[in-house]
Image (tube, rainbow over all chains, first blue to last red; front, side, top):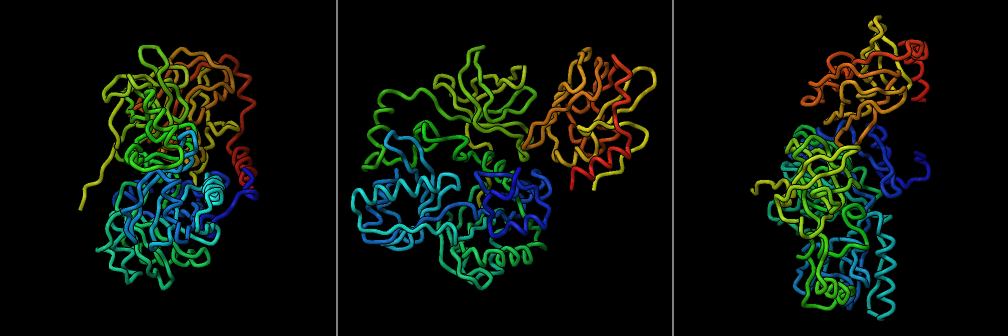
Length: 369
Length: 132
């Protein structure tokens, strides 16, 4: 791997100093693990993990018609969103396929921040910008991705750790809500949210200070068991929690109705891609993203074929060994008539077929406080 | 740091070790360096006994949480025994790659191939070069 052509986050030198294993993730040199995935995974479930998420995108939309633009390009109805609230939504193309799944932060009546996945960010930007220009919406888009740093502090001890560095009343901050405050003396947006299935925070600050926030969090958190965690653990954590990965479990050919994203589509409002989406729904959906669990020996992986009674019925989109459940789990696109939980299926692993079954998502759900 | 590579055995460039039993059979495993690179071994796919493999063909598959890695036969021959205990405790390879974590025993079809393998000192030299 030629690391010189890859983009680096402001934290790259820290990862290198920690001897992290670096991989190419969508053109970014990112740490996949510092020690090992299972340890980082369990640390996050039981205590807290700190993730470098600076590669993700941030797009600001400001102006009197910011909401009108977002209502048109996003599937979720944002009319009732309150300032300080975060909402997950999908950005569709005209065919009803998912360009990106992103979170919407309402800063005030005329200002929003979109947090996008790393790989589709430029595509998101171009798409939203073109629609804003075509329709002449009175608002301004600004790509803040390069100047913005992002850390995810995830796990049951996250609040205790972050509270040592912030005056924000974290215990009053509800899930999927955020506040503008300070962390370690630096201006930051603190959002109670994440991609691990645990309690935790997503912290946004200038890229120029994000390294100092990282150091301070590691300093105050070390005694409480905080450890850096890489994209490997992020992937197993999100998969156990039944969350999809853009570009792997879905792409622009997939509609939100075929994956567990029906709940972020508001059919009562108009949005780009709705006509095609409703047509797909009327003509009947042929496949669905489901959870799977291996019942035979083996681990399903991305791209493995799925069979039922020797007939090919689908494909694995994500698969791993689950450190929490101690078994092999995954997600697969599968023909609708095989998608009912407990349906026995087989996964082709190398030169054999191995028994599996369809199961309900998620695989893991934390106990609420 | 990985453990010292024992001198009682030979090594392949693909990070396997080979103990020559002197009776035409060998024991094969992966090195401590290899298990460190793989980390988190959670699954081992072992060959059936009696399978004939040629040198450099896949003889076993080792999976970590994130990766699937082939183990290439360091020598040609027939699989005569597998370390079946790994099916339930694959982490033994992480814990004791040079001992309890052995993979297969083979009967060689061409003992001359042994001369192509590396000594512990040669293998360590190779690791140094790889890491530079």
